[in-house]
Image (cartoon, rainbow, N blue to C red; front, side, top):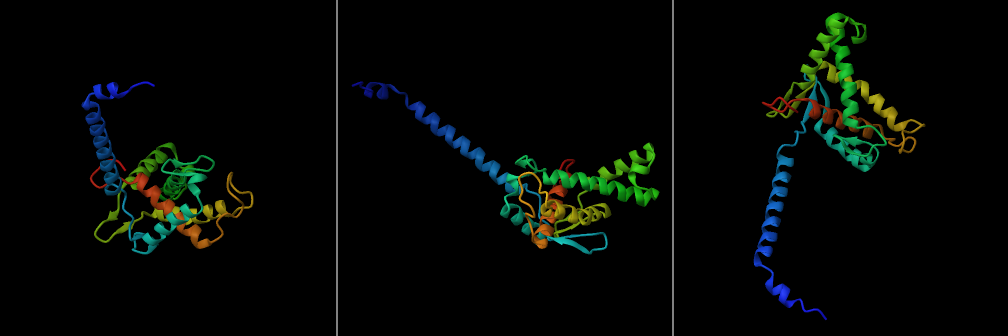
Length: 212
């Protein structure tokens, strides 16, 4: 039988002290990051309105949509903000892509009376630059907890409502999803509101910053 008492006795107490210090430092960093995760999280507005003050959807819709996202395990199918599976799309990125397309067309139609694809290269450059400005502008008002959408953002939400509804209800279901997966229209509407909020948080600049 091997006697380990001598080895144990010769082990420097600094090993124990070092291990404790590493644990303290590690958990301190983890706690700090956890606090930042909550304090730096994008706000959920009480309501989202258009330029006239008409409510497009509410914060309750966003939170319900998050519940729908979890209820149906959609992170096992696609992803949000890059976190999730890869059978389906990144929902926030897909919504943002369509948002940019609809916003370009809205701006192009308002300024030139034509869709973006029908514009000249110079006109397209001007519209593209304006689209970036519109999507990066943060129109959230903390005092009233109101997020005001630009016309293109409102149009994109209404256009994507039937698009996402079709995605989750079609017979030839997307890879990894059963046919007619989300049958409740209210759940699909709330889910679209959740995607719209996630896309807004991805694109809009933080207050006083030049990044989202």
